[in-house]
Image (cartoon, rainbow, N blue to C red):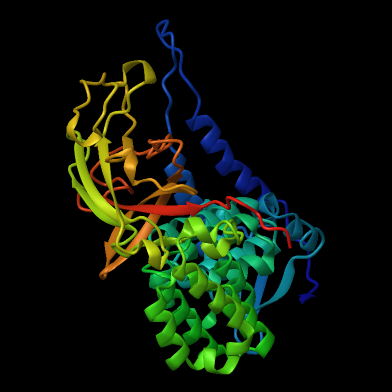
Length: 478
């Protein structure tokens, strides 16, 4: 709510004082063309202009408006002696409020009132220092007063700190939903999906709304140890949130039970408080999982549709699904490794393994220069030209005999860092069986820079994941 006061309009003196400062910057940027120089020399005193504007705000010289900011629900009032020209340059709302007034009283939430000095400073200097706890109040102020540049800047700050693992992703997600900031909402959702293990073990997990939980449970790109970890995280959330039975049952039905081994399913049925309370709501899904594990996937797919999400693995970090790979000094030379995964999640395939060979090169090669190779792990790439600087990653099975009818493999490469013993994912790349290479892998990475966001202590941290994808062979008429 805005409460306006009346006072004598300010004089034109402040207007001319500000124009004088602007004129200083214009003259300082004037380019000289002396002695027939083909290009002028730029004289830049913009820093001096910023200092003058800071002094203008701090001392209130030639101010023509007074802004009083009252923290809602308190008697606390902060007073700013400002200049209508500078406020109006950034904000249409300020321009309207101050068009014929020289004093305005603004009531702001406490968190916004606490950072109003930073907000005003930005209007004068175009810069400010943001702390995590100040991001939302500054974004609120920028949104309310229509300062689009600050709104974008704070949103960029929030997205950058999400990528670094510092931002409160759950709180920022709910704020983005409330303000309709789709870009920030998607950034928060992507971070939560890629780092669900870390979030589920933190205090933020209790603040997840039922709507956000449903969004996450639908995703196949969740990164966690295995599906059992997701079940335990959901059970912990149910214990804290105490949602209505319908919400709890919808969430429990989003668990992919065929991805959980039978022995663990038996333990869940015997010990889980959530299943004891809501067991009938998922009884058909548990039966489906036991049937899937009892038969061969090939036989099961003849009678049941396995194209649904219940049979698609998420990004599991357990050894059965892939392996971590830390590459020290990745810009130096080519590397190769190999690892094994389980053929599929079915209990029928628990003893069957597929060996995968991986080749990493810091230099991308055009198709015309790529070698024909039989064993990626044993074949070195020819020397690449310096301009071919994009990294390359190739993942191939050791032999074609590992494939099974009705199964293809999606490959996912996670790029990130380990912090406090947990994997923090910053980027993810996926490619299917038809491709051996991640085409856009680290396309914009500069592995030569030691402070690259893709490196941790000059090492590239990868996690390679193989996801078996089943295909229905024969559809049985219902």
